[in-house]
Length: 80
Image 1 (cartoon, one colour):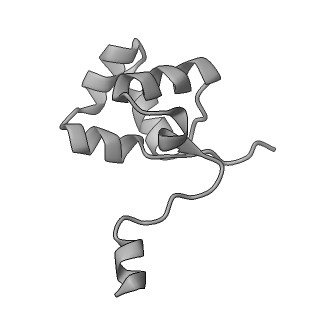
Image 2 (cartoon, one colour):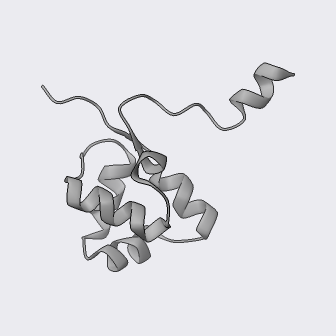
Image 3 (cartoon, helix red, strand yellow):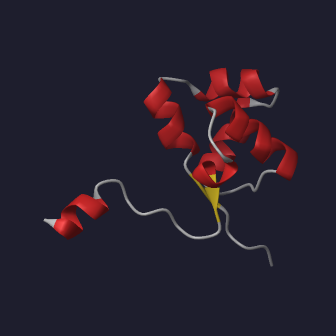
């Protein structure tokens, strides 16, 4: 049984206005692979995870985690 790997690929793509196809082309993978990754249906190889992080110019921990990421705005609502 494999552990879930959570990611922020869709958030990073949205922030940068990048389509799945554009990201896939930049990484040299099929665009459906990006969809599988975003939905958590596929865990990337370490090599692909590092390439994704490099593409977005962030550390790999910003993109991937073994724990779910907090929902956007959750911290703001909690402190209100």
